[in-house]
Length: 88
Image (tube, helix red, strand yellow):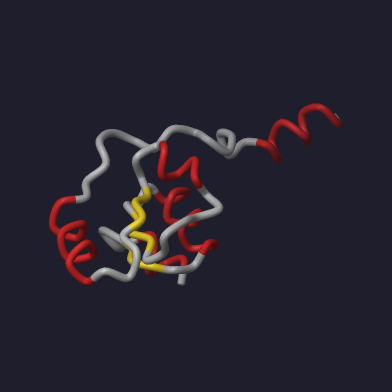
């Protein structure tokens, strides 16, 4: 699943976990719900709530394109290296 996510151009999901994984890969995400537990991905512009409305989904697929790289909301990915450095 992660390989598919890594190589796709957009994700349409109702899964909370997939929303966050898409963010980590820098893949725009359309969430087919009215709310999300990952509001920071919406605020960062990389996830948008489209509900289950077919028109909203179709419009977002055609036009949703976040600008730039996603900000490092969850760290820089180097936690393990920093832990090893501290322990050694």
